[in-house]
Image 1 (cartoon, rainbow, N blue to C red):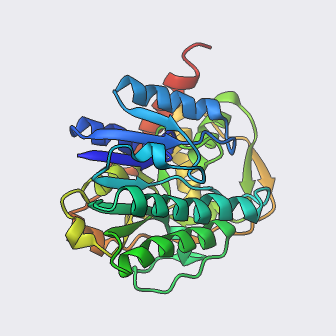
Image 2 (cartoon, rainbow, N blue to C red):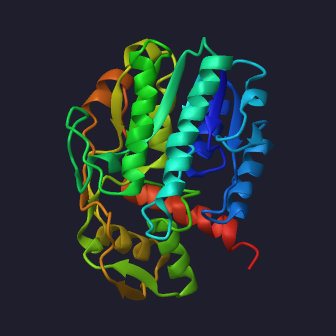
Length: 316
């Protein structure tokens, strides 16, 4: 199969590209290498992909995409997005990169790749709002620019599916962690600060937040399971995560244990837009995709710590 992955140099998408390539598929990745976080980290991921024979095209999804579609694809995994809930990121960035970019990609598919087997949109549990412990039938109640615009993007995709213009599904992910996690995300930042003995910014109340922390390898296994099941999942919204819940404090304790160090805390005021609780209801994923997360929380964190040590400290 020939497969297009957007946001390919990012955290989850880079792992997905590698898994698809290992399964024997031809994979083409797109990424605009924007500066939301250091482009050098994304280029590090891209170099890993290129070493495995995966083409990575540098392009913005809001640009003319015709050159990307010189040959048709069987599947598209759309992971590119404006992430995060930082107050420093203006609404316009979320609208441009989550809504307009998704629509431009859909327009390109309609014009240049009408026989696509499936368009797999990657969404987020943030669409559920403050508490995400419900199944896919519960109305979304996003509380952040990120959640709101990702919900809009999801509906743009599913709107095309409802009109019969393409086969598509949307996968809502829960608190993914593991090697290549973005530098501002919880565990990469935690590991870095522990290693460097730097104070870790901890937002008020966040240690009690409950999360379905899901290892990236489990998420990728769920995503690739869609291949061959596109008729079964057509038009579906599917939660993908783990129904095992841990607090942020438990995560901190485990990383301290793995690294044999004690974290220095820099207490910060509560952050607007943070979810208080996520607990993935994954009955549909189990039923339709045969999905079952396998990696334990501790094992996943050990893998992430080892990745950080290998990639960022070996030359020190």
